[in-house]
Length: 257
Image (cartoon, rainbow, N blue to C red; front, side, top):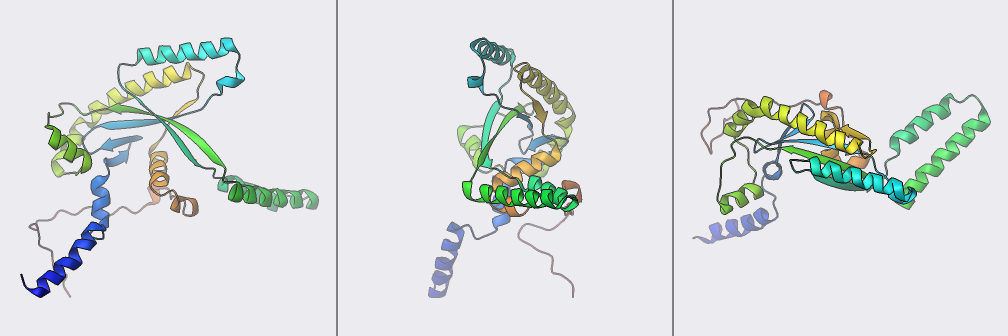
């Protein structure tokens, strides 16, 4: 190996270790989600996931009889389940931007000068409180799964590599589309069962739609950016469509002048 080649190799290795090469492809490779549509998450392995957002309950504020009733209802709910569920508690900084914006509009429309002044003083107080107090809020989610049919048995090594690098392929996309109609029916039944059990515990349950799912993962993967840059309506996003290509691996089309 010549000295020039050694220098090139030394420069290349650090850049690979830092992940500077093809960041976009690396991020997409590690994400297990292939699509978000029809109010469900579609995984690269063909499985579906529905996300239910639930209210919370403070048992300390209830009497002993009420506490026992809630616990027994939750126990019955767990015993009726014939499939696994995932319960997630998410802590995030309280976002009052929409509330403050609504107050500003009301303040501008306020005809009484005294009430208008008090409204804007309250807005300033709320803004400072959220900025300096670092108030947190908790959100509760229940994930309902439905795995794909006929999952192939793989060795431990292949399963581990598939977990670390959940890559997508044309074959997987076609297989997902074939099974989607059947899987969504079974998933809907599981969602109804889960919703009924949670509502029996006096909890409010709402299934996240496509827009809400996208916002959830956008805020999860971009906690700092999402505070200043709100997510747009998914229907207004311009999605670049993949074009069929006949190029061989390692080749690229030269643009015409």
